[in-house]
Image (cartoon, rainbow, N blue to C red; front, side, top):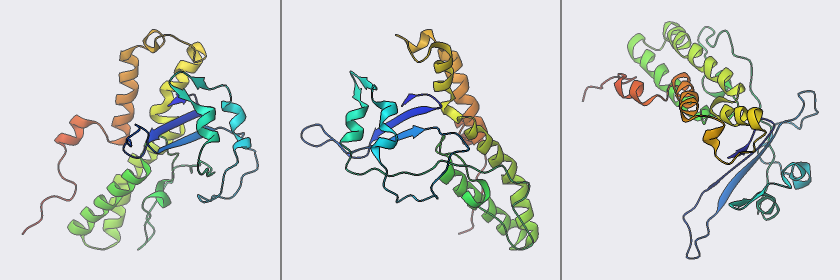
Length: 218
């Protein structure tokens, strides 16, 4: 991962290395546009055009990664907008409730969209199990999950765990020999820990928390 809030590149392998040590990789070129810009409708199957974003990465050639080459040699490029929605004040309406992206659409910054939806389902299942399939259960689920996920939505809007990149950009323009000279290990650890607590990923808290659904009788 390299860059900052306005221009960021993320890449990672998605296959095991072959006999030549090469593997299939995925990459994301994240470019921020003015919020007044004209947008295409959301479509995860729209083919992307390198000329729309490659100029911003043209000089991103490092001894450990040649980003322009990755972009030019990609077998397929797709375009999609990263958007969120303002946190909602209510999810449940009579016998209907919201779950997952319908309840808390968020920037895909902290790998949280799917995981929060899974937790939604488990908490909803807990209340169905303890209170029955009724409006009381939906209201209890709403009151437990909504404040938690609303906090994650706002944290992701503020760059979530990626905020470390923006802090470094602001302090030195992204130019450094040792990142520890710009941002101390203590600061980096605190940023990561704060986000983990907001998102519910703190290891100690998770390990000491009771099962959401509890035990089932055999």
